Image 1 (spheres, rainbow, N blue to C red):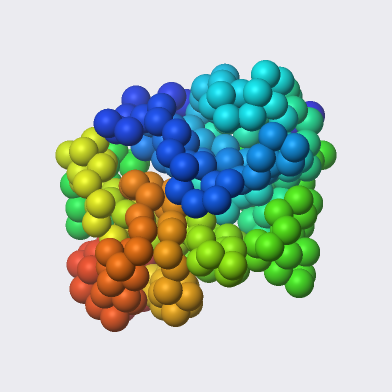
Image 2: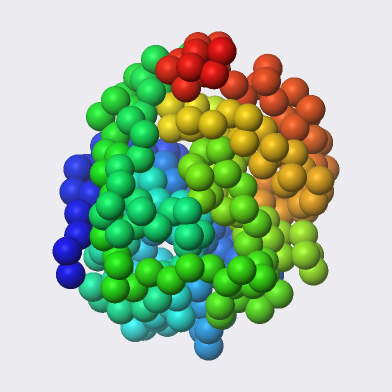
Length: 278
């Protein structure tokens, strides 16, 4: 199998790294350095959502065994998108598990080795993480042998009761995952619950509803529409790609505020993807 192992180590972490948290019924959030992956289901059938940072495969597998028992293996892996911090350990995990991977068809070029993402933009207004983003990998992985398109009808294989929602902006094929029965949302990087550009905020992980990571978001118009789409759902529980899980009124109020004031809260004052649009 030809692939890029996203081999560059990114030496960043947060106070929550290594923790597993039950967020909603059969939804656990595992924090892997500065990014979250989700385990959805129970011992008899579960799915991994996103694949974390590079060189974290063993840690993700250990978390799975802690939740579901020795030798735990998912039915599938679902990707919100293909950025390095969401597919960092995908090759490692597939080498061990050999399961199907589902993603939006617009993400396929970045998951079959064809196309690199836009370069990160360290010039966006923000803190040290934004500046360090110049060193973040943007090369594609190649998981052609395992990759499947998500069904057109919005369903997700092995995840009954869930639907995927196209939420572009951060990437073209970015999706969020929603369970209407209890209003649980796995948002990926459509929005965050931490100021992801600021190193101190990333380390501390204080809850604050924010837009997608500025340094890796090329389409702010689409990103705003996606946030408004998710805010309209008024979710009760959320796991975001970055930050801490959020709940209840604090979540609804924060997301409503972000949707209503997106240009002020989320969009950087300058940056190559902002200036180009102007």
